[in-house]
Image 1: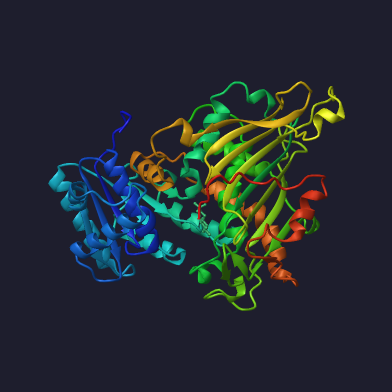
Image 2: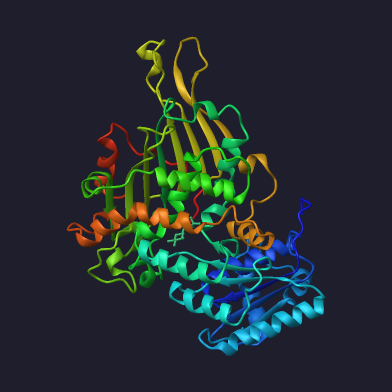
Length: 505
Ligand code: BG6
């Protein structure tokens, strides 16, 4: 542990303790926090679910998960023995008041044994339709009365549209204070995403050029090679707009476009981000037609393997109108960004997996060099690679060595791997640590979530009311539908190729 920050005694109650998120993300993250010395000396992890399991069986399951999914590799025997004695399991029926009485008893027992009042974090790693019942029952059992020590973590999706997000916010705010509610967007926990703030606000050279006077346009691409896999039942009711743009990609845009916060404090940062969402231009139905493009993948070949089209995936409606790709042009209507387009695209079964933000600067005002010197001319570009490559590169023109004057583009690179020896923590480690520390900076506030939904509602409504006639319109292992190229080409630009020195999936 490299800092003086200390966590207080904490009890995690994980609803959905036997589910996929707990296995793949939460258990490895908690274990790695333990290995790195971030867990308090007194902590307890209570997994809960419908399946009856003993503590021992649950521990065994988590050990397998950690061995399979932890970034630090297989668990080390002594460390695991130490860690796992803090893990318990309680079978539960989330609708039944007795379940919550049981939690109450366990919490009281820990507090008595530890002679303290521990923080209690209720982690809802369950399907969103269970959020209301669990939250209400926690409240009825008086398990969250103390806003200082009790917190609730809500996974995405937060609502299905603006109305349902408002409803959920209303329900939660009737039970908890906003300071107790931790709405997860795991992109905010990614090391490279947090670094956008460090890069922008800890370097004085950027601020003067970070505006419409110097920046021509911005591209945000989050592309995935994976298809929907086993998640068809969820995804078919969601689509790319809800699954990725409403949360992850809009959050990336906020980090690029936000004003400088007065301090690095949760409300300051979140106020500046919500300002961006509020300034984003709303779409008329005509704008939706011109500025938003959707796609759905058909079958094809990926890395030598034949893969099914979206409509042939398990638990997907064979006639589905759900988009697996979306590209949208946004504007942020404020002084800083007036007239600067922000292009966004995301899709599944794309040629490459990469999350990249490219900031394209305006061209030089006057060409000094002859045309023969500038054949491979490119405007300055700042490329922030979030994954799989983790780097920031500034692309500039330089003279190629030789007796003649020939310019080409070179990269000035900050690369995580080359710069640091230590492994970057997983997003969930950062976010779980922040829930223990009571730091909400990297969590979504209720108003942010609602603004993001409000912005997208015209697109959602238009797409839902008008079935796409040409789905599937891109094949697996491509860059999405041709109309996505047209969207950006109309403005005289093209989608930039993405850095790919190592493949993620
Ligand atoms: C999730 C989406 O929130 O993010 C998935 O539901 C998507 O559909 C995933 O695959 C991408 O996350 P990451 O961290 O792999 O980029």
